[in-house]
Amino acid sequence: MPEKILSWEVICKEFEDYLRIERGFAQNTLMAYLADIKKYRRFFEQDERQLLPQKLTSLHIREFLYVLGEVGLSEKTQARVLASVRLFHKYLHNESYTSNDPSSDIESPKIERTLPDILSVQEIEQMLNGLPTQTPQGIRNRAIIETLYSCGLRVSELVNLTLDQLFLEIEYIKVKGKGNKERLVPIGQWAIEWIERYLKEVRQKQKINPDAKNILFLNRSGNQMTRVMVFYIIKDAARMCNIQKKISPHTLRHSFATHLVENGADLRTVQDILGHASITTTEIYTHVDTSFLHQEYKKYHPRNSR
Figure (tube, rainbow, N blue to C red):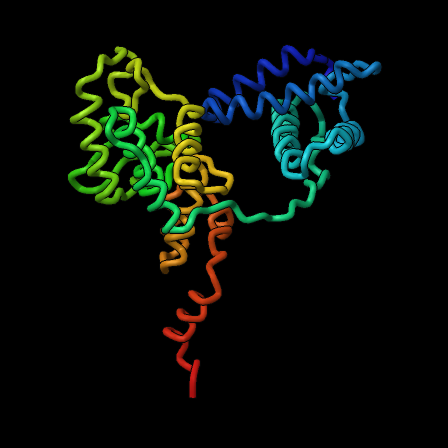
């Protein structure tokens, strides 16, 4: 073990710099990791043993995970926290603060893979057509929902979308996703039409804060919208047309991907559009209905009938 023992405060600050500078994590991802490590740190600082990070063993990590389960955190949340703890200990080991990585032999909690909530095509149409578009905010909200569903964007990608990321004449937008990775995403005619209407009838007539002059979607004050604002726009749109499902901006992303797969889109193509690093993440969208599968089987299998 190294002779120099550093405090939680010092190591957590170094870890934050590592995530921000060397790993280049986006702000939301960075804050999620730091929040998990804050829980981890608090657990051991409040313990009478006053354990420092370099003294932790796999047994201590298991104690921490056990308490997370006891206070009612789901297996999914426990797995996410453990992923943060693993990265933290990997950092300590790589920086030679520890002679081994105590988290390396700890298995993640088994998570039952659940399907995300999605809207049917009819429900999407119902929600879009039910939006009042007689006001500037109504036009903007229609453009937002059309864009989310047309492109399968994450809400963070939507609120950070800039004017110079729009290539509407060739029906593409450039999206900056997780880890600041850029990708080109096709955009449909309905979304283009409503974005152009929003730009002409709403945004062009607004007084815009200089800090937001390149941001596409703005609030009434001419500032960048927040993710929470978009969340409420989606919730209100669903409520107005009496959709009872649990709705969020991510519901539109799930619906987008599901509808593509159900209609025969290649999984790799969907992966590229969504910006998934792994095809495994995209595979959740293969929960197509059995009638579609049967139709595809009959259409393509050479020996489906005599």
